Image (cartoon, rainbow, N blue to C red):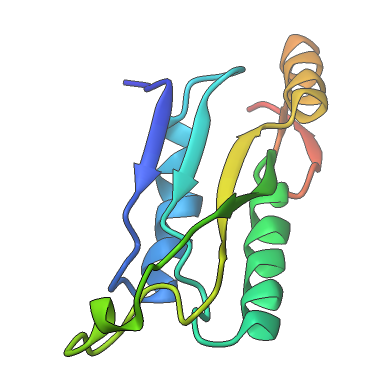
Length: 133
């Protein structure tokens, strides 16, 4: 079974859960070559510097399995801080930009993998070719 698009609501999930989903589920479920994947980007939400680092870590890990990641800048407005009164963990932490992950298959990666398969080889997540047994 494959699907054209996946959105993983990671709010409240641990980073290990997201990593497991990325490595174990996304490569098998996301249709090739034009599938799109995204997730709720709540990575280090209270510190913009650390959110940037966390986003880049996710990007690098997804590259290993042949996915390209870009973060789309989405302007948001929280009209009044009173909206968050009584909320233990607000989403946006007084920011006006949300970084929406847009993840697609790297076409070059798919091409290398396809050519290797045509030659009777298999390609692992580190781009290492070896003869199929």
